[in-house]
Image 1: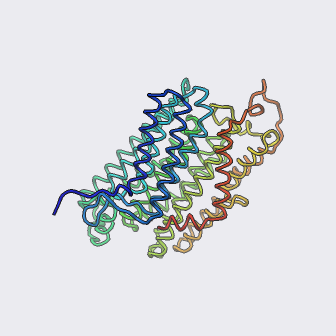
Image 2: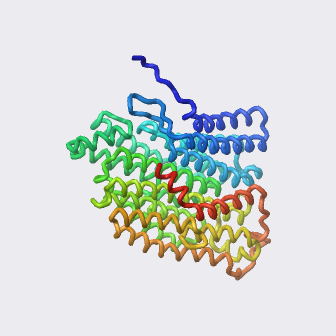
Image 3: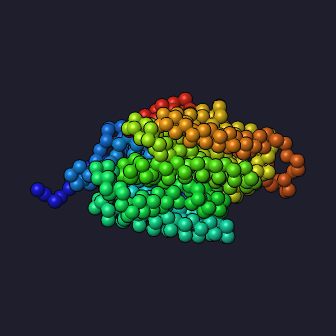
Amino acid sequence: MTGVQSVDSVALLPAYLAAGTAVLVLVTDLLLARPRATIAVAALGALGTAVGAALVGAAGERRTFCVGADCSWIFGGRAALVGAVVALLTLGVLGLSVPALRAGRSPVGEYCFLLACSMTGGVVLGAAGDLITLIVALETLTLPLYVLVGLRRGSLASAEAALTFFVVSVVATTITLLGAALLYAVTGGLHLDRLGALLAERPELRDLPLTTAAVALLLVGLAFKVAAVPFHAWAPATYDGAPLPVAAYLSTASKLGGLVALLAVVQRALPPEQTGPVLALLAVLTMTVGNLVALRQRRTVRLLAWSSVAQAGYILAPLGALALAAGRTDEARSAAYAAAVAYVVFFVVLELAAFAGVTALRPAGADGGTLDDLRGAARRHPWRAAALGLALVGLAGLPPGLAGLFAKVTVVRALLDGGAAWLALVVALNAVIGLAYYLRVTAALWTPTLRSAPNGGGIAAVPLVGVVAVVLAVTTVAAVVLGFAPQLVLDLAGR
């Protein structure tokens, strides 16, 4: 028997492409020192990573770094979906960053390099088959964001947001690692599938206090990453202090990564009878607190941040269906997992479209401003305001934003099928609460301003940079297309 493992480089191709993009960006910036070339390399690398992930995933599941039946890298349909979405989100955020980069508010080389490094972590995360790979990938996704949040020169709010994000993330990572260590002490395994099999086959392990502590610590650590209540306090301040494109990345790719990590351990490693009640409670608290606090927000990015918190509650809700015995059948569990992944995909597309709309309506390099700054925007910039309005209506789950509508229907259906009608009712009530602030912002876009902005400021004279227009148009079209093809996302999410 040989100790040398064979490595499936085809399975690793998306990770190679993402990591190669980071290296090429660094070399291009060093040798050419031309911002346009650096941005072009980063954009082409992100696009190539998305295409590579889709092609490898279309060929069927591939495994590598295996010891017997246990593999640390499993690249299938869901991993391909996550990798492609993360790469496309990176491409979109890079496009939104062009105006600020041209204005010299952030160093181009460092900015693109950090984005590419974060993208690498997101691609690896979707294929992680053990706890070590999962946690390292999640930190690779998160670590560059500490710097990106504080990279805006001369901004005290940006520095404060970066420090807040750093401190909270370090605590969350420490808790997650402690949970993983305790779980290893109980089971002697780190591969997700092996952990799940051991805990299912040996009920005495599940009853140990050490196992309960390990499960609790893992869930708490990952709940910090997705800004689930009561571990959410860092999100609004961090989003508001970060540059708009970075806030968009935090709200989409970073949240996608945290939820993928949480889903991986819940679906494959941890016992559902322990995780189900906790996730149900987290889902109820997260969606309710997020929606109620969002009602009082006057700053645009803070409203989107609290909206993002509430949306995390909707995503966690299908996993909370496992709290009831009727929700633990294999069919219901598969439907719940698929619904959670599908909702994440619908959400990040609509959220990116919303941030793109706000970016298009604000001066280059400016923050999100207040809701009053958006008042009457449709009279001056009808197409941009219409795209932002469509994204907000989609997040609310109303037509013609069909992507958001199907996302919420998918979640409610999974809850009803899983025997959690009470949780479906909570989701429906919170969706009604969410209508208030989404429609309030949408209506403000068409409400005449009561006073003129001084010195032609505000959004009246904002030039729309071509690449931002492209990102806004593409994300809007993607949201519309997903609304008419929701089953495609559900099929990929269930694989």
